[in-house]
Image (cartoon, rainbow, N blue to C red; front, side):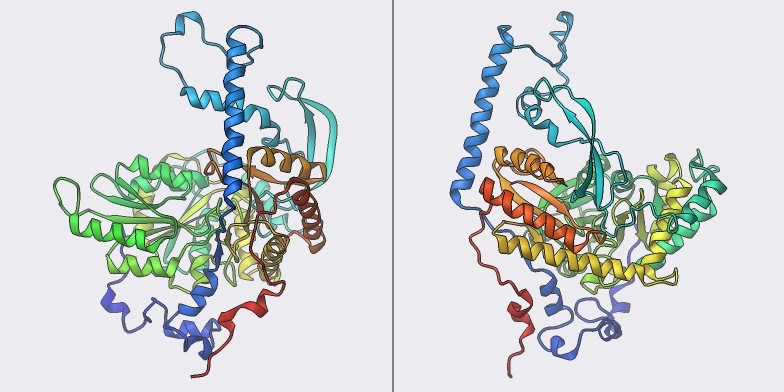
Length: 549
């Protein structure tokens, strides 16, 4: 794997936090802030303001009680099915297959048929329009308690979309904006039907990779047609047997799968907990590999920029400091943060004002902020050249579709201002404004929300299984589409609704959502917060006050 420059060459140019001294002034940190701490100290702490309020004890008790009741009824219904008093809708094994190994574990099957099936109408809803700030849904009903659905022929129009990852609103159908995309379809067609190493390497693919590298401020990049495979197929090319992966406990499934496929030893540290991470780094350096105690070939720290289920932001300056201290490598997944945070949309490296060269492997996807599909790996040129030859995703997967490639180029040029307009910066600022406004209003109402104040991913804690279902159905009745998530995707006591803000949301849309949230929250008793929040957080930010010396 490619390493960054030697530490000795960096010392004259960098502060204690790895920042170029000239970058600090250029990015607007005035001298009064710098007096309070070295480098990015105060600025970093401002962006690390996160909320993980615990619910009252009775909420946890009622949540466990709710799952217990549903489980008991599940076993009772299984008994009724076994004696033939209730029809079993699931596929049944043939008699000659009774001795075969079951395809699913017993609890997984039990959970699906008795718990998930009762609330299945809240997921997989068919959308029949552009998934922009509003969309249309095909109405469906079930006559057998969600085992099957039938369409009524009615369409729910103008449902406010609070679940799509359309952070900057580039999932759009404006003919003027999409003219270049349509031109590329006419020029190249919809697919190249080949891998890039054979005859699928187009000039626009190379143009996109140069643009991504320029956007991120690194030497080179490589793009892939699928975001999930960008992680799961590239991590095995970077590490293997004899290597150690230190993974955040809330990392995405694609990172977990890639780590498992690599054959490397995996150890999990507590979410965003630097003490837990440093303890594992110390042990890895001092003890080496199990039994032999040989040094690890590589130690790779894997984190995300924004964690998609928690809304929290990685503590990047602290992790970079630990990475340098213990000579480890850093793999940063910016699927949700690239384009969504930072003054010019360049992700968490810009948010914390750190040098992109301090991140060994920068990964991101185009499925969120860019309104397209695929992903990228960026960093040193040696790293990218190595992956071109050794990555399964690079060698065996089909090249990115030309219209999708052009859509990413169009969106990225808009963000960078290379299209001659300020539309990209306007969208970034609008997203930040919407995020701060929506989060502040939810806190004032009394909801418990998780995550960082800069994160457009806003989890609202609902806890009890019955309330999760009722919340999703009530919001849809009011023409608001939300995503609800529960066990096993979350801890059993932390079911939630996950809102994703977009620059395309207007203030009227957000006010409408907040109005209905307030009503539904009162009706279902979802306002569990015991904290009092200031309606003007800008006046309550203690870091803005300067003490006399």
